[in-house]
Structure formats: C-alpha cells, structure tokens
Image (tube, rainbow, N blue to C red; front, side, top):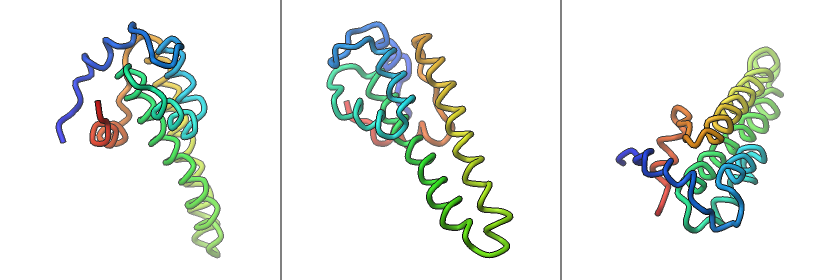
Amino acid sequence: MAEVDMAEVNKDATQKSSTGLDPKICVLLAYLFSWLGGLIFYLIEKENKFVKWNALQALILGIIQAGSLIIISSILGLIPYIGWFFFSWLGWVIAVVAWIFGIVAIVMGFQGNSFRVPGVAKLTDKYIKY
C-alpha cells in the first residue's frame, strides 16, 4: 500500500473538524485516551483527514500498549522463571515506549504536523479510508 501524502493530511490541521472541536484538541484527546480516544475520534470524525489519520494511529498505538501490558506482562509473566525475569518487565517497556511515542505525536500535532510512529504509521496508511 502506498504511503499517505502527509502534506495533504497536515493541511487539514487548520481546517474545521466535524466534531466541532479544534483539530489539534481532537488529536490531543485521541492520544491522551489511548485506544478509546482513538476509536471515538476515528468513528465520529467525517471530514478532517488530520484528525482521522491521527485518531487511527492513536487507536493502533493504544492497542499495542494495552496488549503488551495484558498479554506480555500479565499472562506470559506468569511462566515460571523465564516469564518472571523476561516477560514481566518487557510488556512495561513496550507500553512506556508507546506512551512516549504518543507524547511526541501530541507535541507534533499541536505544531500542525503528524508524527509517523515507526511501524504503526504503515498500518495506519493501510487502513485509512478517505
């Protein structure tokens, strides 16, 4: 799948959002509330590509974050010896890295630019529909 033209997406940062909120505030809320915020703004936004693209990326990033905590830390961390020493902290590291990417995306969003999280942005490009 071809990469989404980010110049076209970012030009909508100054346009009106169909939610009635400033697009930069929508992006902030999408990343701040992780997968739930991303899901809500992805479903209710109809016009603004900037909000829609960032909301989908926030949704995917939130799923990775929650999945790493639930699956890796909680379930695989219960495996005797290997799980205790390896998996119990690995899920937390992945979740913290995802949170840091979310913070960077919020800061970039307030500047009117979309931050492409490595790996996640390709999934976002694949599933975005305009």
